[in-house]
Image (cartoon, rainbow, N blue to C red; front, side, top):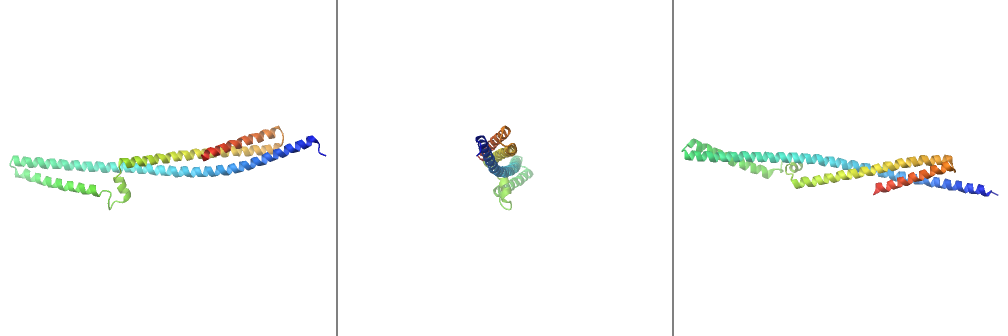
Length: 220
């Protein structure tokens, strides 16, 4: 016969061992889940950061090149207009003063103005065409709506990177809690049934529960 007190102690020890065994299983499962979340979030954050950096560089290049192309075109058009005004003024002066030389110079400047205008028109019509490649054409012909759309996409990638990094941090924190829970469970197994063992096992359960909450937050 087993004394009632001994039987109660045996049942308590079995419950203690069962809880400890279940807790170890929970810790192992949560550790696997959090490890997968941590690796996946880290990779997602890296991809988003690289994409955001690529878009930032592309935006900078498109803004710079398109501005240079616009400035160059405007400057050339201004030069053509000045040349046209000068040819007109010289022609009028030559007629008024009966100066054949001024008239000839005016006609030459008018011819130069016509050729420059034609060249500018042809350049404008063919900008972004062959032999310019598609990427360079996109740089030359970048418009404000296109730049705004790419900026919005770049900001989205930054937000995705920040979100993935937050999930990664939650997963790492959860793994830290599980590591502490494992240590406390081992300590409880050494102390066995008793005040110290129960406190260690309770603390390990609390740490595991916290890790579970962090895993849920990292998944959402």
